[in-house]
Amino acid sequence: MNVELFNKYSAELIAWNKKFNLTSITDPVEIKKKHFEDSLLILQSLHLSIESVVDIGAGAGFPGIPLKLACPNIKLTLIEATKKKVEFLQHIIKTLGLTEAEAVWTRAEEFAKDHREAFDLAVARAVADLRVLSELCLPLVKVGGFFIAYKEEKIETEVAQADKAIETLGGRLKEVRKFPARSLVIIEKTSPTPAKYPRRPGMAKKRPL
Image (cartoon, rainbow, N blue to C red; front, side):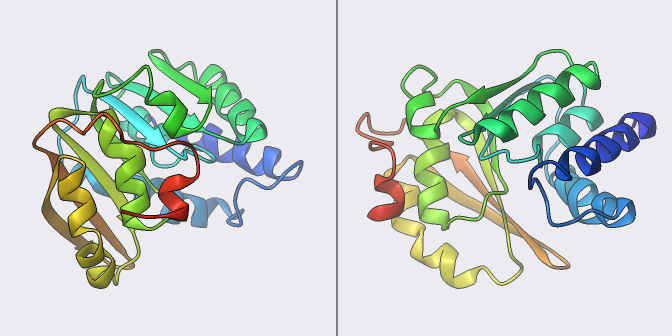
């Protein structure tokens, strides 16, 4: 793992955060623990080599950029609806010299129109209900691929409520992996997502499945 690139990423995050809000965590030690190490927890459950990965609601780049730094041969697409954050992501990709990595200014619902079932893995660390995240992410995942949601430690009720949505969208709950202060909800894509999903922008949140 390239520690120098992680340090450069941390420094850029702190510098840009002075201009506009990217993260409430601005101490380098805390960034390492709560952003970098947290993002890489997925590697304890999944081996990544040359897979195509899409990060939905990428924000300041978590978990996508740390995963790219740890697994440089993955093909990474970062989806973010806030233009300023996309500008930061594009800056980071260039500054760190990352290849086969892009940041796209769009919404997941729009992106899905031209990228249905195009990715081996979708990840989301965004703050949203699992039913909503499933509708935004599962349509992008190939059958046989995975969607992994980074959630809070207590997740049982939310997972139970999302059971119908996951099944409707072509997924199957494989595992909930527990870590201190974090749960990873691992969903396998077992069948194609019906063409009507995702619905138009905002509908997943307004009327969750």
